[in-house]
Image 1 (spheres, one colour):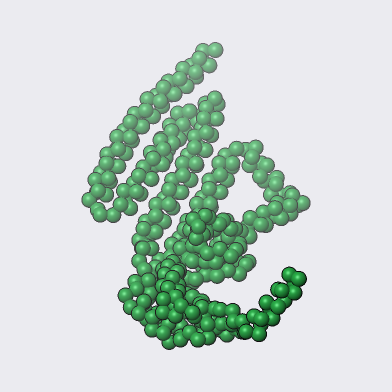
Image 2: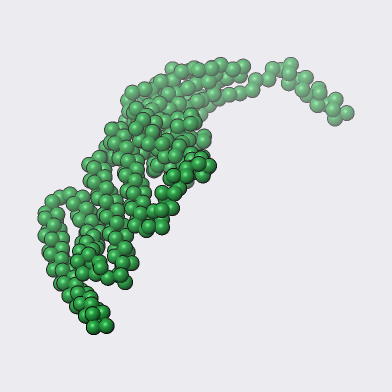
Length: 366
């Protein structure tokens, strides 16, 4: 009994000593941590860029928790590792340490990608290369974070002996269950692979103008599993990322944002096309929506009662071209109404046809 009491007293003394050293270490670490963060913030305030401030803000909390769990791990292995009642506490500390490392790695990945993304300027007129790199970086950021999450959860599960043995037995008995899981995960894996393929081949990029499902819109967000298209009426069209691999669609800004737009007018054969050409040039002289590349009027079709005129104009991007089209359509119609009021499509009826129709009407009344 005396021996047991002595052992218990030794354990209590060891625990008390460990707790005091742990608290002292935490206080010293916290003071050093605060001073370090304060010094880094002062240096970051001197720079013009806000990126370093953002990186300090997103990393300071995970780093603090990581230091805390490391200190607790040192304390636990030094003072309470041999005490049976504290094994669960040590295991919980290991899991918290693994989760904090995963959290910190995720924050580091986000900070690195945030730094590189901020170096890309999407506001410039010719932002094709910037949008290419932005799309690629965003998709690979999601891939890295997904990998870190999976690895972190795996290490946490490996901390439990029962789960580890279950995992080993599942791996060794990869029979029918393995086949079922493989078929169940096939669609998800195909979607993720499609996301990686889009990041590399880039049939679409962020801010691309596309026509999908008969809707005009811009690519607003690209993830590993889905794509968000902001359509013209401010609604969002959400499509699986595999859609852009398996289905045809229009990309109006694949290589450049320059675009041509057409306006169709249907006028009488007597209308002078040259007058419309001169008016078009007059309207475009000081027009900011026009990029001065293409502007012409052509007779593209003839029908029994009218001829079809196509007005072709160019702009720097699709939005400007749409505004230019509606503006020119209004002004050209006003011009025709004002200068050539009888030039829109008319239905001609000969005198014989008129009398015949009147006779038919009288016969019907009788």
